[in-house]
Length: 96
Image: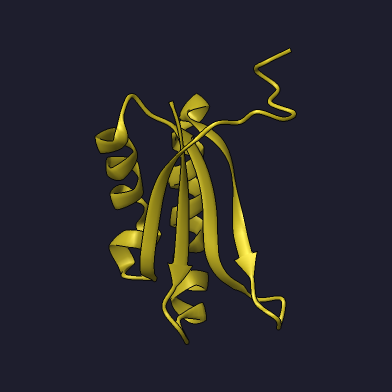
């Protein structure tokens, strides 16, 4: 099942995001096919202020583990993380 990880950064934590970015990207790359897509949310100033990450996991516990092991989460970047089951209904490349 797919899960959307909706992550909101703590205010005034852009430098922490920048400092942790390489480890975060390496972590996401290491998820291989479990990672479907990911990218930052942008504020009015066009600077990142959160993340959308869609992963495939066997269950909610698996999705929570992926979220908890993200270097951004471990560094304390996020004010909140909402994990929701998600159905990729439109333009899903796996449903050709």
